Length: 535
Image: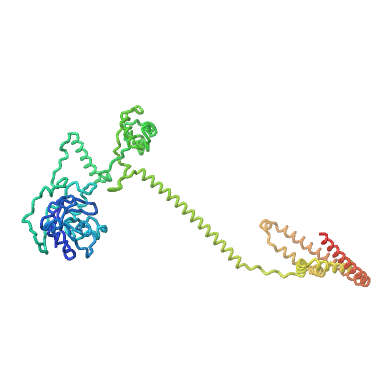
């Protein structure tokens, strides 16, 4: 079932949930049929929340159900349906106001926002708006005071029931025509919807001209906003900046700052100059830290002589350094924003440098790790070359190092006996064998091996004559050494023959020498024992 609610802003068509809320819908339909809502005021409009009406007095504390109108004030409220649950999830839902415990009278509201969960379970939804959403948007933009009461009245002018499926309750009497508004119905309002307002009433000509100038300025600002010259028509210049003109071309920023600093702290002082030539354009902007300092400078510095020129001072009207954030979000100074951006750039540069340093150190660590792994792998895979076979002399020398002192003394006594037998010129068998191994052929091979050694670049540059001379000397030296070697071998043979002849004579001397050596060892042992005891 549908109901048309006519308001001062437009018409709203509402479909009612008769199956879900039969009793509450019957109450609302019969009140509309009785013309109970005619000229009722929207006494509370909250932006993005609700627009409430249904109180004939306009105070928001009155109202009664259809049974209260017929039978009396004892039936002012009735209990509405709680099930099934219908939530306040969309814009344009019509809900009856509950005074507590789901007790309903005549007040109702339209939702102006989505997902209003705080209203669920408290108030009873009975319908939704199917036509007139533009009227809801106008309701949402109505100007109200701090108590959400509109400055200009928004009222219900008439209600029309398109279809009524319910029977009239006992004692109900439908009016033959729409009643005219009574003073009681019209009370509680401020400015009537059709009332003409004269802004110039009771004002002087000067005030009227000032109002007209303000209106013209707003119109021009609106045009500049449309063109794109201003970010917002309501934007205002800063109140702590002075405009100084008629300056001498020789006047500098420091001069002005020194002169104006006696009124208070100055944030910036800038003489505007030509971008190409750098010449002064003879006007400047002085920004003070406080608005009071700016006002004092305005009253004291106008028509003052500076550098043989009388300057003119006025409040700045420039908004070049002011940027609009958007509706309801205020403005900010471009200079402050640039400082923030520069700070962000510095932080980004620092973070980039730190990131590069971290990347460089990580690469160095990876390189050192790879080099360590490579060296460990080379050590694991390394196999030492086969050791050369040691000769008898080297094995003897190695064994000599590992022998104990007693064994060495025994060997020395044995070698001493051998020396006595050979007349003091005999050698150990190992040393004699090594001496014999150096034959002439070995010496010649050694000389040829030395001749094949690679020379350095400096030596390779020696002339062929010098190299031939060295080879000749080397061969002569080898031949002379071989001849000497032959002579020495002959001498050794003669000595061996002599030793064989005198063998019998040496046997007696050997026995005596061996007994002497044994006595010597015993005496040494006794001396060592005494020395240990003394210690």
